[in-house]
Image (tube, rainbow, N blue to C red; front, side, top):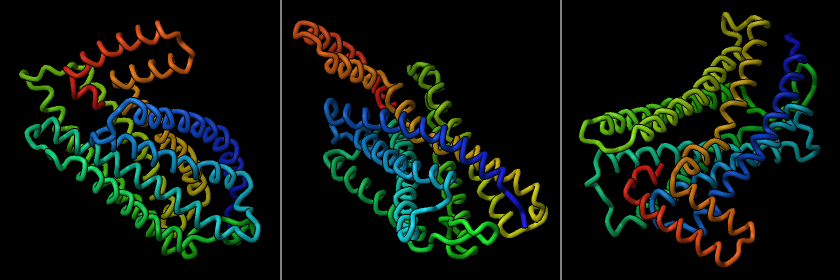
Length: 328
């Protein structure tokens, strides 16, 4: 028996406050991305299409956060439909998680091809390629989320008789943890390889790309690693606690792991509200789009709108010169 009431109280307070902020910023940021892409951009472009899908997947991921916050406060108290709600929420959440990571990786590969192999183009097949890639990613994300939807259930905890949304067998919980760890390692390996090659290309003396782009690429990789690596380590260690493997057969050690799991989960799950910042709003073109949208919503006069469009047109012309910066 290992009493963890203090751990659950900590998780209930911290998760509620933090996830509330993440949900608000994620909804605002990703909805703005969708509005800007639909109103001002050409969705036939691969970059814009991937950004659109990434924003959608982040919103789907965000839908599950309030349920997990409620879970940390009240356990899984959804009455007679507890198991059904557990399956649906787990499926939606996992679809958002996997699709977001895959689209992030796909965007990285696309940038790698554009910088390192610029002569490789899809030509007239670009739209079809983008559509097929997006559909494949969504299908793969749904398939990866199916095990959680089938195998998770609302079950009682033997220690306190409270309901929890968990895998129905410990073996499947271990498989789920390893699958998540493996998925992160593969994604991070691909992203790291692509960005290292991009940096090597940009740091060449013949490259005219500003150092701001190099710094931005470095920040993207570091944030991705710092956000998800500690959480995956905590998931791995928590699985060792579930099996009570030495030295994780000690209650105090497992309580420390649980605290680390709560904190690292908050950091990792906040990535859904950081994506709009790093991948959209730090780009020149999207900042101009956002300013134009805010001026339009603010009720500008016709003269002011024409003046704004003139400024925006000049900025867009300038931004086309640095096409790689636009994609970032």
